[in-house]
Length: 116
Image (cartoon, rainbow, N blue to C red; front, side, top):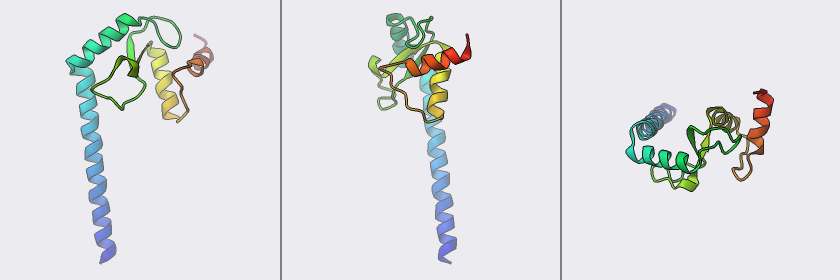
Protein backbone atom coordinates (compact mmCIF):
# COMPACT_ATOMS: atom_id res chain seq x y z
CA UNK A 1 0.00 0.00 0.00
CA UNK A 2 2.89 2.39 0.69
CA UNK A 3 4.24 1.94 -2.87
CA UNK A 4 0.87 2.94 -4.33
CA UNK A 5 0.82 6.06 -2.20
CA UNK A 6 4.35 6.94 -3.30
CA UNK A 7 3.42 6.52 -6.98
CA UNK A 8 0.42 8.78 -6.52
CA UNK A 9 2.43 11.49 -4.73
CA UNK A 10 5.15 11.28 -7.40
CA UNK A 11 2.51 11.68 -10.12
CA UNK A 12 0.99 14.68 -8.31
CA UNK A 13 4.43 16.26 -7.95
CA UNK A 14 5.13 15.67 -11.64
CA UNK A 15 1.81 17.26 -12.64
CA UNK A 16 2.47 20.28 -10.39
CA UNK A 17 5.94 20.71 -11.93
CA UNK A 18 4.45 20.51 -15.44
CA UNK A 19 1.92 23.17 -14.47
CA UNK A 20 4.69 25.42 -13.11
CA UNK A 21 6.64 25.01 -16.35
CA UNK A 22 3.53 25.90 -18.35
CA UNK A 23 2.95 28.99 -16.19
CA UNK A 24 6.58 30.10 -16.67
CA UNK A 25 6.32 29.62 -20.44
CA UNK A 26 3.10 31.64 -20.53
CA UNK A 27 4.68 34.43 -18.46
CA UNK A 28 7.75 34.46 -20.70
CA UNK A 29 5.63 34.52 -23.87
CA UNK A 30 3.40 37.34 -22.59
CA UNK A 31 6.34 39.42 -21.38
CA UNK A 32 8.36 39.07 -24.60
CA UNK A 33 5.43 39.49 -26.98
CA UNK A 34 3.18 41.93 -25.13
CA UNK A 35 5.24 43.60 -22.43
CA UNK A 36 5.63 47.36 -22.80
CA UNK A 37 8.71 47.38 -20.55
CA UNK A 38 10.38 44.70 -22.69
CA UNK A 39 9.58 46.55 -25.92
CA UNK A 40 11.14 49.75 -24.56
CA UNK A 41 14.21 47.93 -23.27
CA UNK A 42 14.63 46.05 -26.56
CA UNK A 43 14.33 49.31 -28.50
CA UNK A 44 16.94 51.03 -26.29
CA UNK A 45 19.40 48.15 -26.60
CA UNK A 46 19.07 47.89 -30.39
CA UNK A 47 19.47 51.66 -30.67
CA UNK A 48 22.56 51.69 -28.45
CA UNK A 49 24.05 48.52 -30.00
CA UNK A 50 22.70 48.25 -33.56
CA UNK A 51 25.17 45.55 -34.63
CA UNK A 52 25.30 41.89 -33.72
CA UNK A 53 27.52 41.24 -30.73
CA UNK A 54 28.93 38.15 -32.44
CA UNK A 55 29.34 38.86 -36.15
CA UNK A 56 28.87 42.60 -36.60
CA UNK A 57 25.90 42.47 -38.98
CA UNK A 58 22.70 44.39 -38.27
CA UNK A 59 21.15 43.26 -35.00
CA UNK A 60 17.39 42.79 -34.97
CA UNK A 61 16.98 40.54 -31.93
CA UNK A 62 17.92 40.66 -28.27
CA UNK A 63 19.29 37.73 -26.29
CA UNK A 64 19.22 37.30 -22.49
CA UNK A 65 22.70 36.49 -21.20
CA UNK A 66 21.02 35.56 -17.94
CA UNK A 67 17.47 35.12 -16.73
CA UNK A 68 18.27 36.03 -13.12
CA UNK A 69 16.70 39.47 -13.56
CA UNK A 70 14.00 38.36 -16.02
CA UNK A 71 11.24 40.94 -16.04
CA UNK A 72 13.57 43.48 -14.43
CA UNK A 73 16.49 43.22 -16.85
CA UNK A 74 19.32 45.69 -17.01
CA UNK A 75 20.98 46.46 -20.34
CA UNK A 76 24.01 44.48 -19.12
CA UNK A 77 21.85 41.34 -19.00
CA UNK A 78 21.21 41.51 -22.74
CA UNK A 79 23.06 41.50 -26.05
CA UNK A 80 22.00 42.60 -29.52
CA UNK A 81 22.22 39.80 -32.07
CA UNK A 82 21.28 38.88 -35.62
CA UNK A 83 18.85 35.94 -36.09
CA UNK A 84 21.62 33.55 -37.21
CA UNK A 85 23.85 34.17 -34.20
CA UNK A 86 20.83 34.08 -31.87
CA UNK A 87 19.95 30.62 -33.14
CA UNK A 88 23.56 29.47 -32.77
CA UNK A 89 23.65 30.73 -29.19
CA UNK A 90 20.50 28.78 -28.34
CA UNK A 91 21.82 25.65 -30.08
CA UNK A 92 25.00 25.88 -28.00
CA UNK A 93 22.96 26.30 -24.84
CA UNK A 94 20.75 23.31 -25.74
CA UNK A 95 23.90 21.26 -26.30
CA UNK A 96 25.07 22.45 -22.85
CA UNK A 97 28.20 24.03 -24.26
CA UNK A 98 29.80 26.77 -22.24
CA UNK A 99 29.31 30.28 -23.58
CA UNK A 100 31.30 33.21 -22.32
CA UNK A 101 29.84 36.47 -23.50
CA UNK A 102 33.08 38.32 -22.87
CA UNK A 103 34.39 36.56 -25.97
CA UNK A 104 32.20 35.68 -28.92
CA UNK A 105 34.75 33.41 -30.62
CA UNK A 106 32.67 30.25 -30.06
CA UNK A 107 29.74 31.71 -31.97
CA UNK A 108 32.00 33.13 -34.68
CA UNK A 109 33.48 29.64 -35.23
CA UNK A 110 29.96 28.30 -35.64
CA UNK A 111 29.24 31.01 -38.20
CA UNK A 112 32.36 30.12 -40.18
CA UNK A 113 31.16 26.52 -40.22
CA UNK A 114 27.91 27.66 -41.83
CA UNK A 115 29.85 29.19 -44.75
CA UNK A 116 27.57 32.20 -45.07
